[in-house]
Length: 192
Image (cartoon, rainbow, N blue to C red; front, side, top):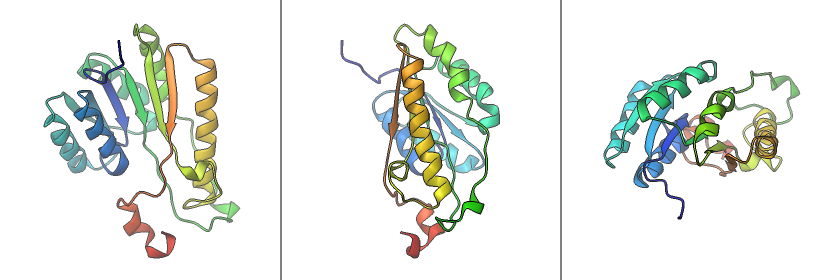
């Protein structure tokens, strides 16, 4: 039987705008139910939920950041009746001189996969974990060195998780190039 997205339950982090909003809508068009995670813009998240629901699927929104991953996964399971796919799309960058090593800082590891792993293992078909990376992770480009290095690290993390957490986990990454979202207005023409 071919794999279908119909009635799959999807959590999209950073789903309220840009690529995340488009991902939510695409899953909805294919018949998947969607939890739209956002950090601060409730109005934008509500707009995405309304659009997703217009495709005749269930959609909810949940505010939270990486510190809230266990709760976000739990609420997704409660509201959607399970969890089949995670799209780890949330992220940020700040513009800096690409060669400025002083612009680098440490962040906590994302605990999203740890929270979802037991749920995927309980699903008869397992689960899908997608991360949003960037072509900057495979080249020396992007908004800053910190951004490019973090995307490269994410790609390696994806490979490590895929190698160690199977067979019930299908892991992959999406590597878009420059996307003309609100970042083009923040970055300005000189950075494009």
